[in-house]
Image (cartoon, rainbow, N blue to C red; front, side):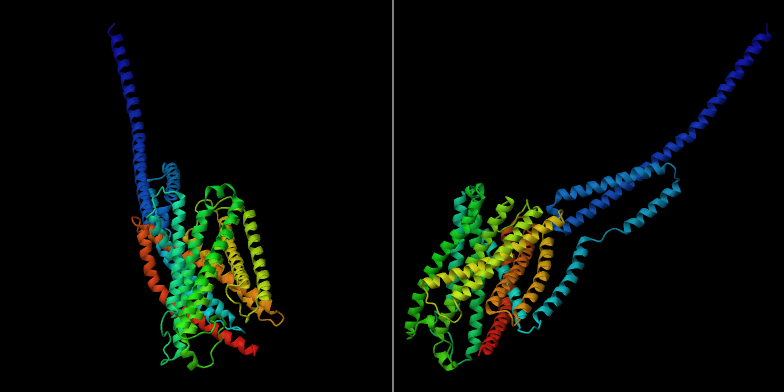
Length: 591
């Protein structure tokens, strides 16, 4: 009986020892697993820290880029999408690294960190540095190209005139648009935000009257017609005439362009009326109606000007008809009759400026109507499609065909006007023939400028087709467009000039070619003007958000003080000199 309990106790002891051994064995197996799990958690936390650090660096780069490049501030949604996409890629990369990290040792993780640090050193270039690099290379290229073009030698010497004309048109249009934009912004500051459309149109009409009246009085004053002795006979006469002509030519051109854009703004506001928006073909009514009222205003002003000029001549003891004056033979005679030269230049320059106002406004409003009827999208008063700027290829082709039709009409009008109104034949002001001549001049300018506007907007629409992600209204796209059109226009003008120099082409053909060349030069001026104007808008809106109108006005004044004197003293002076020398050569060949 004693042996059984002893054997039972021994069995229980053996079982207890076996169970203890198995517990120790299981515990020893769990320790590596727990340590492995802890290492994995540590690795995951370290990887998470690296991801957070990378995201912080990414956000800092995006913030610096947004501060350096104002266009990122305007496209906040695009930046958010960009950051979200990069963050998603980072997270996917982290998951892959996490799966592979299970098989890596701590030493391999440190090596991965070193490789990541090297990758960060190979990040993309800073946008500001990239922009400055491109700008520096572009500056030297453009300057040297301009130096080559302004000194280009051809057989007749016309290419220099065309190149200097392009420079003069670009600067004058740029200054005119800047000045008018500031005037328009200040004027509409006085109009309540929810004012009636009639009040807005009335303000635009007052701006047009103001610019037009300023042009009339400024040219009259600067020409010297209102002075008792505009030319000093004791001094050299030629420099006095040259200086005075350059002054009133610059003022007349600048104020004529301002008046033209004021007329564009007024006509654009009328085209945005609801009744015209509901019936797109009715938008074509605005250009001829505006032309009709401009004709009445210009003829009335010229009648008043002629009466004023006759009184001025009578006051100086001159009874000859100023419209039939001939160039005087000697400087002595001319010195005694300097007032006659002044009133003649006053009338001629004002007449040309009035026609340029009509051509600029009518051509632009005509293209506005054509674009609206093609696409169903009416641009703003200055022709900008802020949102719906992408159009199909069929619309681009239709607008291009419209431009070609306008170019053909321009050539036909040139041929007709050269036959109906030959050069050298004086036409008395106020007659029906004078009225028809004015219509012919305006129609010729309208079709030529319309062709230029059509080419410009065809190019902008084509940019949206080639690169849909690019906004054609941004400064980068405007600069690229201006560069491409400048190169394209130069080779076209060079080819047309070679054709015009051929002996086989007649006088009418040469005039038609010159009209097309003039339209291309205006096209280059328009494109560069839009690029410069966009730069001023960005500076005023981004750098001075609190007061954009005052900032734009201040920039306009500063730019005007810098650009206007240099344009008048050098660019316009050279252009007038080249035209005068060319006219002398042509008269010598004719003799």
